[in-house]
Length: 418
Image (cartoon, rainbow, N blue to C red; front, side):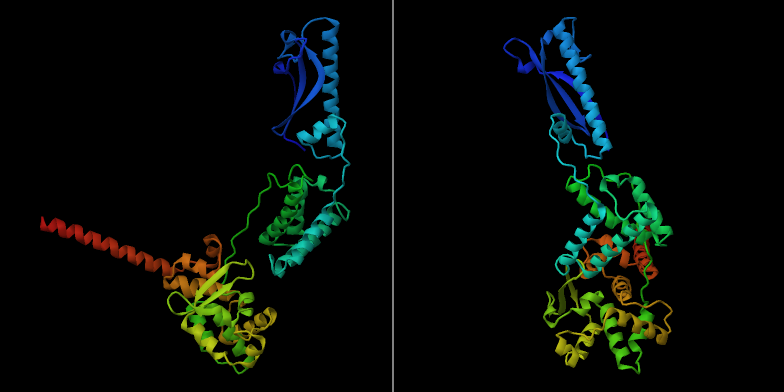
């Protein structure tokens, strides 16, 4: 339970008594944290052996003090062993309290109630700090943990003091094998549990986290995006079904703005305003992260908004576009992909990747600008969306090639003139 446990008897020579003796203290060190306990014994400073930690001499007084120190030392080891056996969190202060006869009632804290309380708080903060999907992920995580406890330990709950490294690694094994989770899903579920453990540590319910020395890593997932040819194919296609045309238009709007489904769905007329360049911009806040996102509107996006500015459903619902449920949108997008001959599994989120890659980066927009428009807090997140295309590499290398050729020509011209 602890990294270290050490005892040391010391004489406090600076606290000399009227008779010239100095008091003896027991210094206790637990995980680099120190406390001192008075032994209620004293001795002449010149008789104290610092190395042996005892009083020198064969007098009855010296023997009495040394015997008492042995008793105190034995009691310290007994208290330490008892705290380990009873799974009582050991800190320097809790140890000192028990040595002095102060015993707090040991509260048995179970994992599932703590997890459930956390999830209730997340659900209460939906729309303020958390998105609905976040609450669902925590509910799924606790469901996996409950099933794991039954599978591994044949119990419905577990004392948090029993959580250790083996528990975490076994849970990961269960998720990967029994539940057939892929690497990133398993890692995310473990990460959700780790947050609950951090709550326990922060509240001093746990002294040591079972996640110490545990490491895992998210594997990069190659995300699909539409090429410019595929994007044109969808743009130019006219569908017999009016509903497919509407779904296509909403999807294209996201391709040219980078907005996620939730942000397109809640987009209002008041969020379209004039930007610093006197052009129309989107000024919105991302629902997922509550971060600001400012996006200049490209001509295609402006045309799509104009197309639906007098659309009855949009006027009645106060929206800019006729957005269906995410499930229905994705179902119709699969049909659109089939009609357009696109073999990729078309989902609404591909639009966001298409904006980051095909629409912006491939046309020379800096990744810093793309990151700001996507509403990301750091560029590392943007890099998961924005894949550097071969065409971009080719363009950059052509620029470098041109600079090197110009430099070479200048050198040759200089040599010739000499």
